[in-house]
Length: 250
Image 1 (cartoon, rainbow, N blue to C red):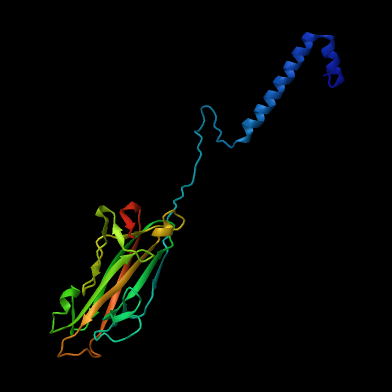
Image 2: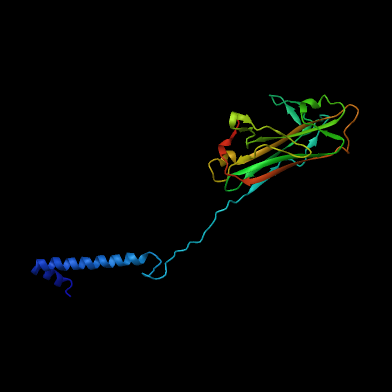
């Protein structure tokens, strides 16, 4: 078979032969390229009339990683029924001057969602108190009770900046929960955005602010037998609920 200069000479001698030769060379080239492409992709090869061919894929399920950090700012809830001048109990006016002292020094519990998806935080508050203490359900009526040592504890939900959390329907604040002996839960779990999401910067932190009040009767002073403890329980679950259900108050 002629190559190089021989091909050129052959083309010069016979134009018809040159076209035929070039056509043959191009055809061979196309066949070779097609063969390379055909063998490049992995396939399952079956023969006509033979067993069917299968391609099997293993299944993989991506599961969320639930990680939540819960921090408490204080170690104790302090009853201060006599309104003593203790640190953390200060009541201040608009100018920052102390004008009195709270009768219960509470705590702020911070729940930070470090999961890779949104979570729903269920919150329950419980108080265990000695039989000498009456658990009040309304701080406004405590002052009128002159017969019992009263203890009132509540939890308020806020965002990371301390703004009240709102239920978007009607724009109402999520109502505080009054802690009880049996345990009382917030009606709806609070949503916290997952890390890496657009909402995480504002919605990835939920705070429970515990506050309340105490009172005492004129004839019965508080003493060492008047003990109590406060327990806040968090039920954490992955959630796909609509994040617009809860909004941040200003």
